[in-house]
Structures are given as structure tokens and as C-alpha cells.
Image (tube, rainbow, N blue to C red):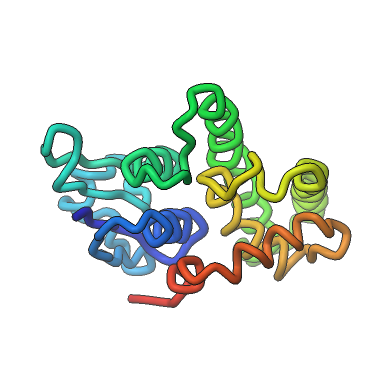
Length: 206
């Protein structure tokens, strides 16, 4: 069993979605970032940068307890451990998966969070920043739309590469920008949204 320490954010939902899709037994441990619980000493031991999500796996490699933070790393770790196709077993396919997993975790989510900051959370108007990040989001959505025109999911089969970007597309693509201009992304989004594990992962908690 592993513990999932997380909250209701884009990265937090990634890890919870991955946990549900993995089929592995886990315990949900809410970290209320509104109450600054991510700065508590116990949490900092497993996530030194005070970021959610983080996991404690009591049945890690060799039966040892391991801790892990960073959503992309968690997705890959759980995908490999579950061994159910979410992270491919073929070495050549792993190269492709790593490319899209790292792009989703490091590039897409980072820029989507900046979009959310200037469009939703900042509380003041910064028109140039809003224009810039809307353009960036639309460019990335367009790139994914082209990719998904040729693939059912990002690398063919449903995988960690989809989970890495689904939360931000669900939050900002559906609710803020809209997906009418990105029909392949919309088809992809709706298929993922309908998955039972995804529906369970997006139930509010706290």
C-alpha cells in the first residue's frame, strides 16, 4: 500500500487519477494547502519543496519504504509498478512515453498554471500577460489537437502521457478557453472524463 498526500489542484488530481487508474491499493492523505499544511515538518520530509502531490510507498523496490514527490515522477513510478500498460513495457515505446510525459509535466502544466494565475487567481488586470498566456495555451492545445488527429490517445493507447495533461485541459481548456476549436482534444477529453477511475479521482475531498 502507498500513501498519497495531495490536494485538489491540477497536479494533485494527476496523482489521484493515476492512483485510481493503477489499481494499486492506496490511502488518500489530504494536504490542505489553503491552511498551509504543505509547510508542516512532517510533509516537508517527503516533499522538501513543499509541493503536492507526494507519496510514501511502504512496498517500494526491494520491499523498502520510499518517498517521492513531483507529479511526473509519481506518474512514471506508479505506472511502472502497476505494470498495466499505463507506462509501456517496450523500451522503444518508453522513449516516446518519456518525451510526452515530461512535456506534459514540465511544459504544459507549468504554462497552464501561469495562464490560470493571470486569468483567474491574480485579482488584477495584466492585459499583456493574459494575451501572452492565452496564446501559449492555444498553441499547445493546437499541437495536441494535431497529435490526437492521428492517435486515439497521446501515444496511441491511454497512458501516463494523457494523465499528465488531462487535469489542466479539463480545468482550463473546458471551462476557460473552450474546446470548440480543438475537436480532437475534445473527443479525447470526453473519453477520459467518462472513465470510472477518472470520475472517482475527481470527487472533492478534504
